[in-house]
Image (cartoon, rainbow, N blue to C red; front, side, top):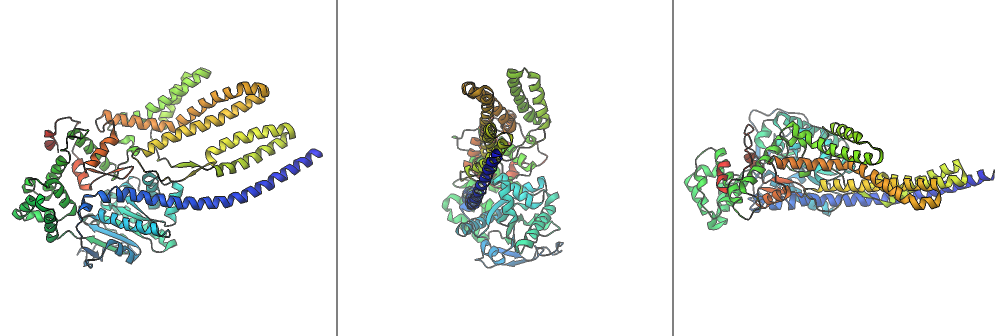
Length: 632
């Protein structure tokens, strides 16, 4: 009777304590959530600015000498309510005042905006200038939504519902956890700035338009007008049968002859020969009515003869000749670490692979096995690491239980099971001691209750042991939370994060399992025996268990990436120090760095290096730079 009374009092006290803890913990949790929300928002703004403003816009060839372009409103390029067929007369243009900016157009309609223009007309630059203005507003006013730039070319890979695609892009491109990304997209907290509708495969372009329309209609039902921006080449958009349901459509007009002439005169004598070529060939004026081409010409022929411009041919032939000359000039510096022809081969393979996989932005840690040329090599990427893990497990089992055959069978089965799987980006996981303390409350209560049910005295000891081990185990999951860091993104950030997670996960499992084995040893052999042998036994088994689990669960992905990069190097598609090569191409103004990814300076350059779809990629070469022109 006395025991029951004591038990009831203890349980009542525990329940009262837990209730008080939960009330205080709920308040702390709400405060912590608000702080994390503000922090995540600030980090997202930093990442967008770092990637697209600092990394791309401020380094853009067009931005270096921006020519103000006129805007015209395309009054029949949108479908406000239903899908519409293009009228026989084509697009109807309405000139806007010369002082009209893209930001003012978006602010005036407060909804969707379509930006049209010819290839090289500066659509992406205009989009990024708009992103810069929206970033400034969002940083000054926390009620403003978050602007984020997305490349639509990747949508065609799965053709998922548009809100799901946005969540995946936030997750993979910006390092935003899926839970945070879902919340932002569902609440309309993100302004999608969608570049490259024309880069979506032609067979799926209309489906992409319909997906965007369905997405914005769903958001309108809950939040009213939704701001988003889409960029496309005019010709490709005009070929569609379905309009975007946006409030406004504008088209960037090419620079006038006076603007081109003024730009060349502002450069001084360095571009005199370009002006001479223009005076001799009237067709060159049309060729230079593109901000991108104009700046490529200025970069290529500054201070030298522009004889290549005098070569007759079609617009496409002149453009190929110009890009060849531009690449030759960027690779003239002999101080580069890589031979020019090898650099061109590597970039040609990269351009071709990006086009084949529908990518505009290249992320080194997201290259998959299907980038390799043969099925046999693709299988090696999965089977070799899996067999290595299996052998490691086999050696451990051999040491303990004589089981090498088990290790081989495990490795083979693991490799076959993971053959077609694709690695997912790794979220930024951090640890909250507040959450871990909350788990301590729960497991301590559970352990004590179990102990009281078994036996008041001995049960308390057993329950406390259970509670401690359960707390350590629960901390692996319950103590973690997703939080974005303000660290600068790097090309290998995903792989480094994955390796770090594998080590942390393995060590924490080793600690939990080691404590469990040590306490069991102490309970079996008594306090003296437990103190003498428990820590050693627990450490031994804990380290083995933790290392095996960490390697199998996440370490295998790291090994797959290493094997994949080794095969890329063996095929001559990439150098050993790939990041160094990509950074050198960035320095030479062939690529742009977005922090953890790379872009070609323009889609036209990517298409030039990739060549026609039916053109085979030339084999790796190490010829002297004199062979570069014939290769290009």
